[in-house]
Image 1 (cartoon, rainbow over the protein chains, first blue to last red):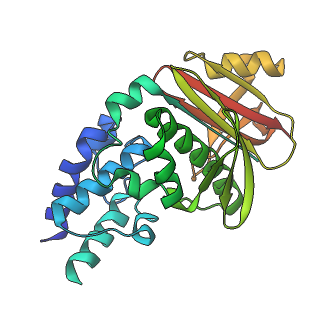
Image 2: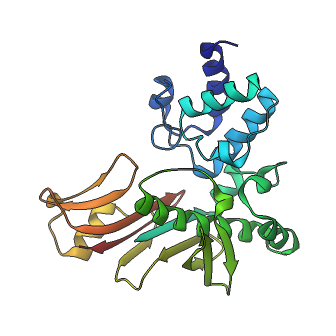
Length: 83
Length: 179
């Protein structure tokens, strides 16, 4: 899967939890889940569980700790998929 | 340092399904999970523990100047309906919780510090602060730094040592300590 395809899958996953639609329209790798998309921090857990289901990977606590932005999420998904 | 967190219990019911597979395991330690599973008020307890963790996290971010997402690192201990403490990296942070059927609000401060707080239904932030501080509304503003940490500024000068803002659904709360 290309980086662009990963972004599109991730966009679908986060959409139900987004509270700032404008930031969502302009989503890029630099987008922050909490500061930009205003995702409720409890819903960040849902994003992580959805990512695990979608890509059939396990995100441990060390990886989860960094998962605050689109870029960090993509890096984690890519590294789990390749291992 | 100050940290606070509020959860609107009605909104939480529709916004988060904590009974979803894997949800509790991501957030809570084994001990906390046991407490939740044996409680007859699980919904209330899930969000009580969550607000305790979040309020302490907000203090830790101000100290370490780095954001992260790892709720399990904050181990909650409940002492009573109001009092508790959270252990993070071997340090103990005392917490105070206010709860009723509408909301749960937790706050922590590492030392005995004076602060003001306002918990209300979406009351305008600046109004609240201008009243508390006795300053003109037009002269005060709240600015967040790149970590999302807020502070109050008066005529461009920072006047708070620490501040924490939380809002969820119908509720907003803020606490601050003057420099």
